[in-house]
Image (tube, rainbow, N blue to C red; front, side):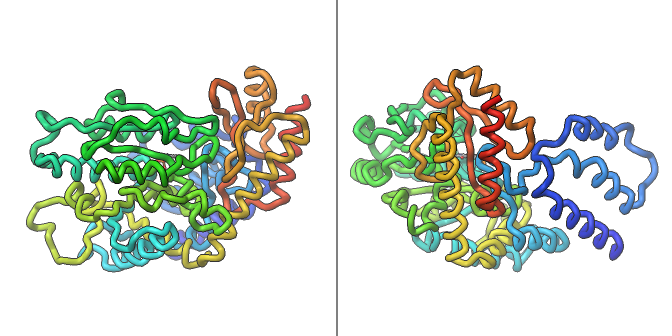
Length: 447
Ligand SMILES: *Cc1c(COP(=O)(O)O)cnc(C)c1O
């Protein structure tokens, strides 16, 4: 075991130390060689050292360098040193985070991390929370709590009696709703198409003046951080109107919620804290290892009612049982890496990381505009949308940038226009990385 773990550490160190200079996308050759990991499953055991050597030889060159400093695809966080190291140690612990009695350490660290997280987001300490895989499951989990609460108010027990014959719920989303919210609504039996869609403005913000009539059986799904523009829905106005109507407001804040940590960006969050539930990711802007998301619900009892299991042998104590707040029962102890990330950054370090990424996004926008390209969004957060002209031309540039390998940016379509999307979400990105990436993008665009 000693030799194996030391070998793993040595190999990981080599990988980490080379990542900043490696091309971001793996070469097609390296991807092709992944076949070497397959073939028929051997009959006899293999020495773990040899297994690790195989994985490193063929796996490491075929990774996407998402932990490197120049990956700007989707909205992808890197991995903070403290959270990577904690992930290793926690891997050795192999704790089950379902019940207190299964792992007191996992349960306690989760509670500590939760207290810190709620403080960062400006949410009440009494919120219920589920540590889930990502914002998709966080949307699902929080919306399950909403479904429970609204139907209970209507005299219906949805966990016991299901949705057949239940009083209908009305769901309102913005025109720019993230697809994972629709997926969650589908999973919950609320339907992907049985929804009212509210017009959005040029930045993708839901238009509060276009909200339909709401009542105590309405769930309104708003966004803190549009996945393309980074824009925030007008939460204050929407939450006030929803409160008057008795409706439930759910916020998809997969990365946007972290704006709360940066005093210069916290104003974007105005009104968000008065919603009823929130979904966010820790594997995006907090830069913890995948996978890690968070479902937060103001009324903890609704979340617990939607998620709790009732088998007698699982009722062990009156303490907070983590799996009464998540769809999963057995799961890994995600709170550990969150704790380590926050403990190493501190409030100020977190604020600086968020602020730095936003300034870096502004620098990208400025550099691209100076070169004569059109930036399609107001860069208020960490997202930049740029057009290089006609759709065909823009797609060519995106492909060229990805192949060139200095950095990686994805493509999107924004209000009918093809665009390259730059998302700056990593602790590892320096000012030099931004300049180097800008130069590489402009060189490809000029070809
Ligand atoms: C990334 C994202 C999601 C989905 O998050 P996963 O972590 O991939 O499940 C949902 N909503 C928004 C706004 C996002 O940016």
